[in-house]
Length: 517
Image (cartoon, rainbow, N blue to C red; front, side, top):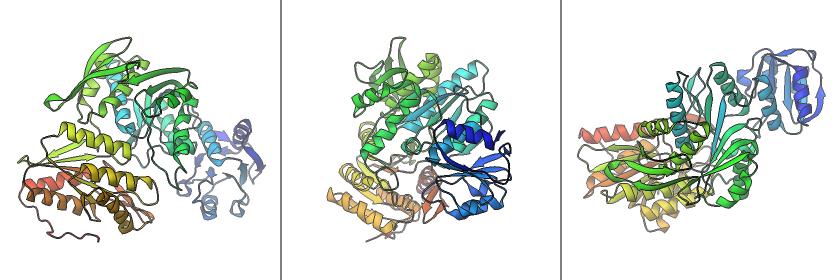
């Protein structure tokens, strides 16, 4: 348990404390809880006032529920009677106090951070599976995970709300993992987490940099590509061993930044890579490849389709070898690991239609997904693509994804994907304009379920085989519509359900589905 005095001390040590005002309690008053969510406040809470959307009413609610102190960049009347810590950077302060409150100790558990524009989730699942195999052999518990899909800390296995949670949540997960005896935890690290200092106090035993391409450029996220790239590169400031993809765009710049780490290892197809892959074989519906490094030269096989996953697998192999994981555990893990919402395949009983569900949602992932479709699903001569773009963020995706989908598809359906407070019809119309620039036919259907049904009906009426790509959401269970999260079936549930209707010959489609002009 920490006290008001402990908070004051750590903020001063970080050079963050601009001013402190004592509250009605003394400096030795214990702090029982720590949060930035007024709904989670209990008596004895230290409350964090952070974010552009913060309202003073949240602090008033926290005080009424028994908060004894708050941290903020400015003083609030609603905090009258509470101890106030006025700081120069509330997000850095939140990370520092999170580490203090939850007793963070570097290396307990050993932590891997994975960043990049594409492939974080799959790489995280691959590495976790390798570590799990090794720990099971030694009679040790399953390893931890913080990812886009779910979080596991030894106590709870829960659906994730965001790729990298806020600092208090991250440190609570790490504390639980330590208490449960987990020796390793693998986590995805988003550019937003790095920019807004959610992981500022952490030490990554291994930091993986997968790739980079322009994404998340908007007033709400990163002002430009330079801001986005710099945020990603900052992971090396808190990394022991850096694992860098030599095939990534801007590889030399990434390597230059990686010098901040204690050690650098490289991976990729590049002949100079420390972990070099070659001899990729896509025959028999399975992908296999060879990895050569100073310690071994071995073949591996993936349970998942998508040749782009070889790169993710080699990144995980490099990290696992750094930890001393035996090759047999790496091989076993890759041969049996699949990831929800990533390259999930559904084929109709008559073989006429194949549906692929994938989380691809930016330029780099679209390019690699379409490349895999052409290389690995050549028997399907027609490609039908269903996707959407979010409202109010990642604005560059509308042009990039619209053009790529139009160039490589025979038909495109633009649907909803987290429209938020922006008008869905306007988003779809903008994306449709870019699709049609390429000469590809395009329609817009608001509801994803209707979009899937309409495109399967379209494929049923065509001659030959069709490949339907349902992209962008993967295993996500909610869409943000307006100010609220709306519960929604995952893309895999949608595709599986409609394909079952098709197989049962009970499918009832609208011949003229509700479309936008």
